[in-house]
Length: 188
Image 1: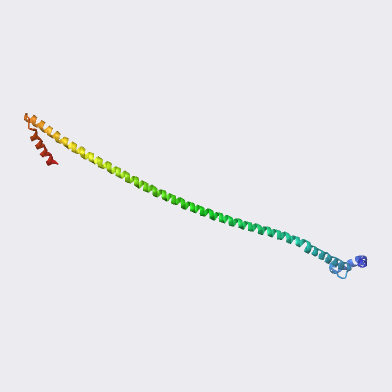
Image 2 (image 1 turned 135 degrees about the vertical axis):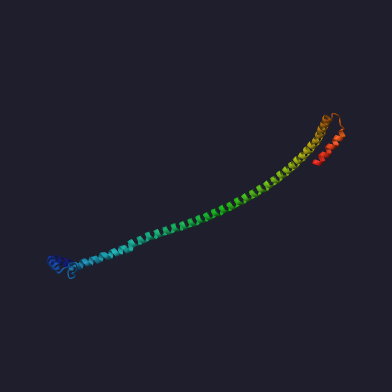
């Protein structure tokens, strides 16, 4: 092969003028240089293929696998954290609803107790007011009766005084009292 390359090297200036004249020298497979270059390209390509297949791709697959495992682990952790957060929110809502129900029940019981206490106080107050009104009415009746008795006495005294001044003589108290009583009975 070395001999062919040396011979090709000696012939290169002669072939190059012919190759240039024909158009595409890289496609002249009759030329030993082109065949040698093509063989080296195949060898280099095969070596690169083996290097990529056995060294680069496994490393890339390992990196992809590690990343996928990490992402899957992170996603699982996120799902678990979300599930725990959902449970915590549910427990919080349940506790809040129970507290609201309990608070409403306490408020209702306080309102009922207040209403019952107010009703008892109102009844006691009404009873006291009724008693005071009855006592006041009794006092008014007594005062009226007392005033009427005094009016009777005053009327009798005034009548005697008038009769005495008009007639200039003393009149029997009993007669004046009877006449005043008759007049008062008629008017009432």
